[in-house]
Structures are given as structure tokens and as C-alpha cells.
Image (tube, rainbow, N blue to C red; front, side):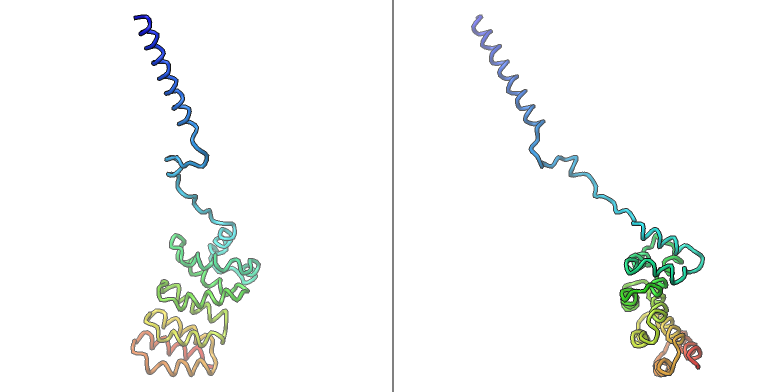
Length: 203
């Protein structure tokens, strides 16, 4: 009986030692192992940069900031303004000013961005229309060919904006473009915009 008791105690102690050893192994997880808690951590949220904050500050003014205010940013502000123009969390007035501000940035990328906005049928109508006016301001007569192509766009509002943007450029070439399009246009309100453009283009 004493032998059995000692033997039982020895087995019990051995079992506890094994359990204690397993416990230590489980606590020391291999380096690099993913724990459930780590896997559930959400990705970091992007924080708006200082350039975006400064741009929003200028866009929040009642009138568009002067050209010098935008030129000091350089080409780095172009993608910021393009993103703000389509950010629906930004007030509409500031979004439209962002498009117009692109005409005041001294960078080839600004003109390219405005042209991309104008030609993309998936962008909001108001953004494309504002881009038409801004492109005329940015490129002057160099924008005539690009704007002319949009006189046949399916977006009625854009066709109106393009007719007016062309009219503000003026010149013989613009008058020819508008006169050529006028008899082909079937929508009354767009025809009216073409007429207005012709009036603006008069010398």
C-alpha cells in the first residue's frame, strides 16, 4: 500500500509537471505568429495631408483665391484639387471652385487633368461642365478642338457649358465652330446656348 501511494504521488507530480511545461510552451508563441487579436486590427485610416487642408482653406473663401495663391503650391496641388472636385463630403461650391482653381495652377498637369474631367462620361455633369469653362481659361485657343468635340456629347448640360466656354474665347475660329454646330443641334436649350456663344464671340 505505501508503495502504491508513493507511486500515485509520483505519477500525479509528473502529470502536473507536464501540464506546467505545456503551459509554458503555449505562452511562448513563435516569433511572427499571428494571433487572433492581431488579425482583427483594422487597417490604418489615411489622414488628410497639410496640402489638402490648405487647399480647402482657400476653397472655403467666398470668391476663388487669386492665381498667385495657387501657383505657390506647384504641380503637387493638381491631384489634390482633382480629388476634392469629386469628394461628395465637400460642399458643392468648394468642389466647383476646385475645378476652376485647376485653371490657375501653373503646370501642364493641370490642363491634362481638366481635359480628362471634361472627356470622362462617368464623372458628374456639373464637374464636366465646370471643367469645360476652366479648360478654356487655362488653354485659351488651344482648347478649341477639345471643346468642339464635346458639342456632340450626350450630356445636354455639358453641351450648353461648352457652347458658352467657346463663346467666351471668341475669334473667327470659334464662330465657325458654333455656326457649324447650330443647324445640327436639335435641343432648344442647347441651340440657345450656341446662340449665346455666338453673341459672346462677336468682335
